[in-house]
Length: 171
Image (tube, rainbow, N blue to C red; front, side, top):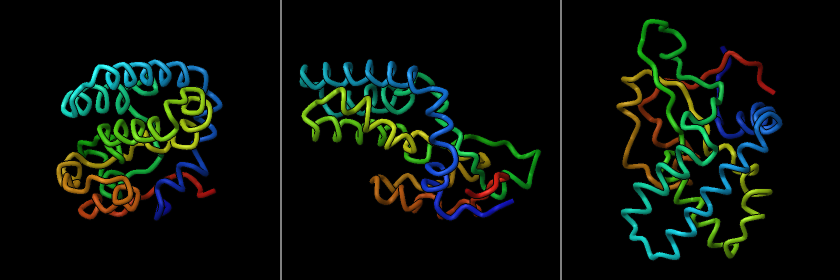
């Protein structure tokens, strides 16, 4: 096992391009649809609760790439790796709702430029959909109070998770 100190960097260097090469067309298709849904909700003055629960969490966070499971980073907690009998789950590192909110902010910032979002932004930010396998016990202890992107990128919500490892060679 190899320690993973920076999961986002690990994903971007070792997994992102492989995933993108296999799934680019499909992911762009689904992401474009979800952007259209987001824009419709914005144009209809949907309230924040509706945006958060439906568009952010479900539409963009879980289904933004056309698949609910997220993208396996190849990273797991040491407890998940060392205990084959432990019940495990794949944690969306950034969180489905925050993914959606981040997409919304980027979409507004680029003046609703759908082509930019689909053809540039998505690939640059694919890491947001990555998952890390943890035990169910660890998953229950991932902090719910860490709720901004910078903190999540710093993995502050994983303070009660055993060290992160991979079976893959570091690139």
